[in-house]
Length: 150
Image 1: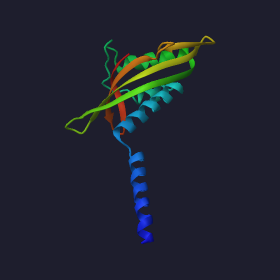
Image 2: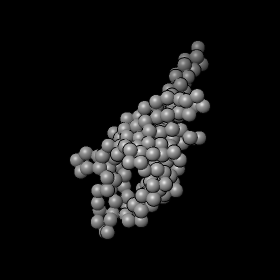
Image 3: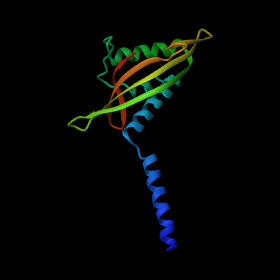
Image 4: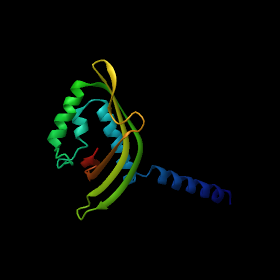
């Protein structure tokens, strides 16, 4: 009887731990967003571009190549970049016939950097962070941005 008594709580604990650490699509997307933030803070164009889809296009008709050039220029002009992410709203939108997963997010972002020796606000507001909306598709094991509105 004592073995059964201890087995039930142990099973419950195992199920709860599994549910907490089981990698859901939302958790993986959130993790990729934070990895992208770290890539920006480390000023690595290559690492940032790992999260930008080859077919990227935004409302300003900027392509992946345009974004690569802009990010490279930004990293050359500033240093000590800090990205602050406020609220994050994630949504797994759909899965296509070929099992590609699409997702979207809306988040508040503030980017601080050092420019010519001064700390500057590069993106976002003093009172409220700037709103960024991004659409992702999962390519391999990473979510990549294929559209953004900022």
